[in-house]
View 1 (spheres, rainbow, N blue to C red):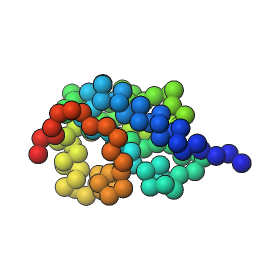
View 2: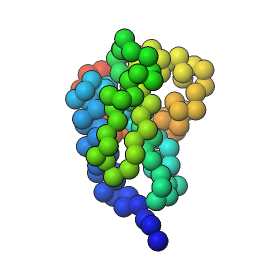
View 3: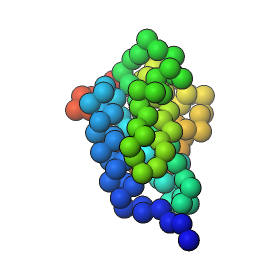
Length: 114
């Protein structure tokens, strides 16, 4: 039976979060099945990455936060502060899940504007 080594996956994803902050992310939050605990051996890791700003469109930012060296596939959702604020007001599922069940792994050592 195929099993996911949850502990080693989480350690690898925590390192990933640190690298994402080094690339400019303000906040990295694990969402989805790995955060909820209902993962399977075939689960990927859904990760919300928040940037201060970007000139790129959201889909153009994704390649900057992919990492094929991880033991699971990463599915990054990469938004700016303005976009994530708008999505929150619109009741976006990804923002709701990040707030209710997400695991914040890394935050830049700068204050998020409020």
